Image (cartoon, rainbow, N blue to C red; front, side):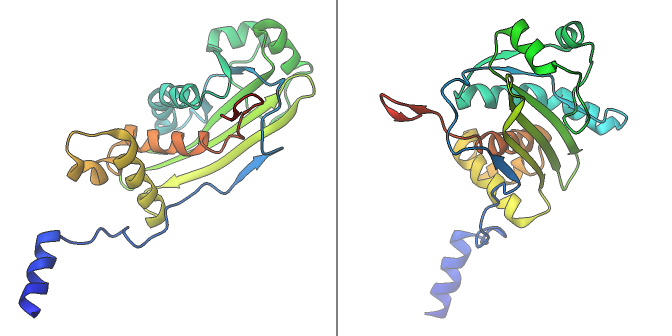
Length: 219
């Protein structure tokens, strides 16, 4: 009997170190309301910013900006318009936007007139560590233009050295990335800055308030 148990253990392999850990869920999230208002339909997404004095952050912006934008598209919560760095400078005189610092008077209304948008998403990359253990930090806000009201914000760091984060990343990889060899899915997401960044972008965007369609219910 003991031999059979040992053989069964060998055939199933070693239990993953994250198997008994509850996957991480972003908690530092603010939602003004549980559902998005009906008048917040068209949203301008500003260029991803961060402290580019740090070489890693600069590289992270280049790698993760298209990934974040794609996750926002897939959420299908808004009609999105993506503002380039050149457009932002022409419209506002700013090359980067940091919501933790004062913005020019009328900043959001100016963007609303120029882009025909109801709201603005301001994304910042706060942490980027492209070597194990990988780490990505996001600070993202959704601001309604007319009243300059924050409707949603998230400020989280995803550290692959944390077992709950690793468990969440591995679960995402198995469910969403569709890698050709599922046996490699878990390990690759924790060693690939792009794939781990994709998991983190997915996780923060998933915290957006839901969109209510009065005819069909929650979207």
